[in-house]
Image (cartoon, rainbow, N blue to C red; front, side):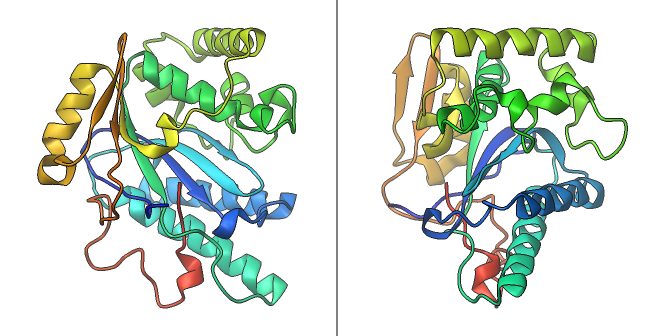
Length: 263
């Protein structure tokens, strides 16, 4: 399996996936999932990370974030969240070694219908896993927060999400989003789709082609596939260091267990 790649294009929405080392269930305890979310909240405060959705499972996490134009916000945030989560777990368990697989993966998502599809895909993760029958039942995902916005300690950037989806109010968005989830559950369209976790970009043909062009030489070997209004820019089969990566080795700390992530 190729090492996860990260890219950077200013202003994009990114679907980030990050897996525990060897897909171990290192987030199986509720206390560790809560700590991950607490550090996610800290990243929002410290770096102004714009979070559109999230879910923390027992062995991986999904984040949907909006880049604010500062190329360091996302890698700094992931360094903080994943590093502190791993450090606390290893210290508590008197454990050494990798906590995360090699690197997290980032997929650029178009802000048309594909944004809605990605939101739904993230929230139906634990339904796919057979853990819950409805995303409202999973306390470590964004669905409940979209339906019932928090007054304090909220993670989701409701204003940004509402604007991207062209809703006038969060009440309207919550009703529509509930309908999208219910429709997906009804027709059974909640199975795993590798394009959300294994591609460089997902969206309209124009968006995907523009993404490939903006990435320049880093995307030369990558193939655009799709049709009927939905396209993806595939990852190459060989590893490389994408541009959503700090050239000073931000994601390679001395204690490697702090930074082992994949998609």
